[in-house]
Image (cartoon, rainbow, N blue to C red):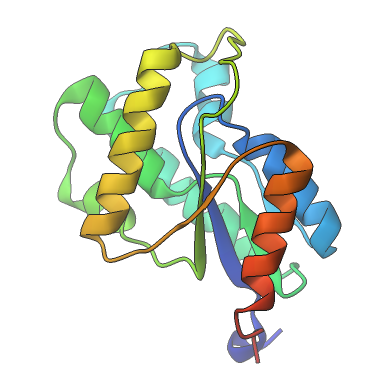
Length: 177
């Protein structure tokens, strides 16, 4: 696929247990495309430790590689179950600092950024922190997107409502060349 024909990237953001992965799967299915899982979660599950600053930079780099590879196989839209912005948030929260490279990766452009509301009960799966952290992540994500000049689509409610909200937004966006 030529660069001009590449699928556009749709990013899902929000706090832990806000339905991003469930929405990513559902959107990919409804759009007839593919989705990229959150590599940082996979890496955390492998190590089961707080990821170091260097590890988080590597996670952000790998997330981008996975997106770029999947973008070549995607149909019009690629659904991304996170972005390096989330990795930056964990780095700042866990280490109170982030290298310039990670900050730059966190400014990666997405054609549509979708923020999932934390509007249902928090589900602890052994990986997540707590509902207070989820609320902090949500507020931080909205603030950081605003600082970057990104106006996200904020979705909430049951999964079917969220899918419909994203589909309506996509219908108003120009499709890729």
